[in-house]
Length: 269
Image 1 (cartoon, one colour):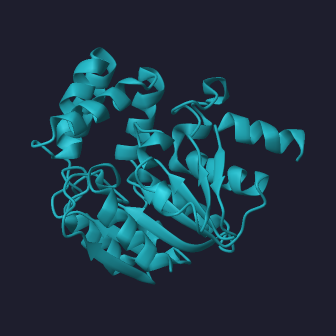
Image 2 (image 1 turned 180 degrees about the vertical axis):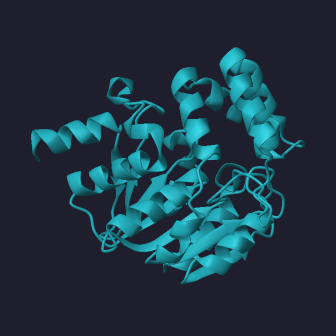
């Protein structure tokens, strides 16, 4: 493997495991890292090669590689995905992306159509802001308040967001765990990632998605409401929308890993 490829794998803290010939890439969402898949990947390791990574600026990636210019749009994060796949010489992969990583994976697939065999989006959104003819879930003032809170009191922001994202009052340990995950981020980098995520608008890219796509949506999600999933279902050419039976909140791969695994397996197999 070349020095460049080795550097990319180190940069993104890439971990490869599993026994299969086919490859699944699991991509974490905003404020998270690859550990969010810990309860999902054991179900796939006997039959697939598993690729886990952290976006530059997240988890145990090399923070020194972070560039405010490159990561000033979701295309910079999509390039991380493409770089990793090039470094590992991957093709025909199954890509599973949570939240904003759903659209990041879509952008990577549009740029390199031969890369992915199937695309799984968990709680995705092409645009988080409400518009005159579109329900995204947030008013612009809501986003501005969140970004201001991140800047002035990051820990208070994490404490505020965690229960909203998890929607799992009966399991406070889930909320506490997600809050700790949010707090593990660099506040400055996390704020820009939040700005880029919540102010992005990739609705125009949806008709260009070239691969069969699964939209996996919970019944209750305060970050990406079901109306967004319906919009995606109407605008992605070749897709399947599944409303989960048991999953609630924005992180079903954490709170309901069994059903998440079941739906991913059904779709890719």
